[in-house]
Length: 595
Ligand code: F6R
Image (cartoon, rainbow, N blue to C red):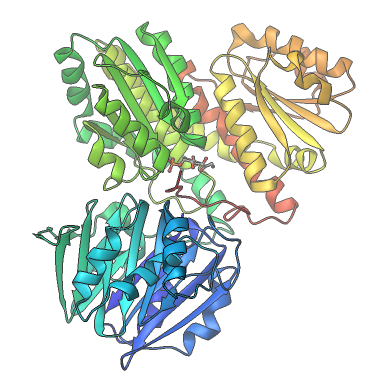
């Protein structure tokens, strides 16, 4: 959700910044901009659209210090004027986050004679800096940030300072050093090829980077220290490696994501951490799982199998809803926050609220140095590797594997080692699902439908939700995911010959029940298709289906890892058939760091 970058002490700042923005583009692609400092003058270029729209203009700039931005619009539509950097009175600023009190600050500044040139909340920052600057940069930065409410990661350029300033409050920023050069960026992969060592700024910290040196202070101006460590291997950027899109590359990486997640769970001794925490509390009274979007869907799947395996109340909730509910978690609660990025604002704040309520907070995340890991009592790593495509695929499968291991650890006994063995088997089942399924005809059917509905019962319901989300977000074909029994309570009114319903069946016991829901669709002139585990769907259902895809059957709690794969592939192929960019769908960004 907006990517920001800064550098100083480099040969050509614009070149470094442009390359960094390409790596950060998954965070937003409404507009991009760069500002550099050359001979005490700031020059900025910014353009609506993708980073490549900036290439020509960026090539005209050089300078040894600069800042850059790639935007996901919150305040003010995507346009050249609303693109960052915002430059005024000898300062230039890029911002990730939301300045909640921008309207009152803007009114005050306009009354004092400041002229604004955008509709963004962010522009107030550059005006505050120019207002408070009396020859001391640190004083101006401190005075400005103390006026801001909301969430902000900033990179600041000042025409009288050969370097940059980075500020962190509630949104991520990482600083890096390599030779004489210093860097800052919203995430680690953007620094991986540049910096040798990195440090993650904490909330309320400011970094001043100039002349090969970097110093830190808090918002009161007191000096702070930060330890640099080598760039973690997990932060290495990803490349397409011959695949046409990251989405299909990342689906192909699912077997490795599951395998590496299982290894990380054992290497990090997560079993002992979880069972010790449970023992200390005399067992958890309830389990609450939170996440957003795809992460919520893996949390929901885990809630189903947690109740099944453990027999304690377990439920999943979207993090944005949990935050504003009273007393949802207590001292006996195991609160599991699931997030690929570990930076999603709602999930991070939900975890904070659960911790304040006394719950034991477990973070299940793909990013080991994220904000979520800083809040959690314990971390269960997902080792899916860097996920570039905005639509989550391999991280979902890694999350379900990690969550299954969490639940098995709580159960203990022989359940945990058996789960490890089952997960080893899952890798080859995933590989079979990736290579075997007849996705092309399914994708053509979806591409020509006016709406696609996914239905499932039990553990298949969260997968139906995820299949629907995936198809909508990358292909823009409308639809919904439903519990199979719910369709007849309203949505069946939408069924006609133009719509397609995909029934998920991975549990033989529920096969006949879901088949009845499909009969009701046929009776209303609708079309239907089936995705099932082999041997689970009635033969008559498969004979009538517009298409059916079989995946290998497996233990119920792990079935979402395998059964989601055809749905991800269908979404991908539908997007390609319809000429969409599956890696960067419209209006979206990968890391949602605003509420
Ligand atoms: C959908 C998708 C999003 C994310 C959601 C949470 O494909 O990627 O729905 O799952 O924004 O993101 P994380 O997992 O980073 O908290």
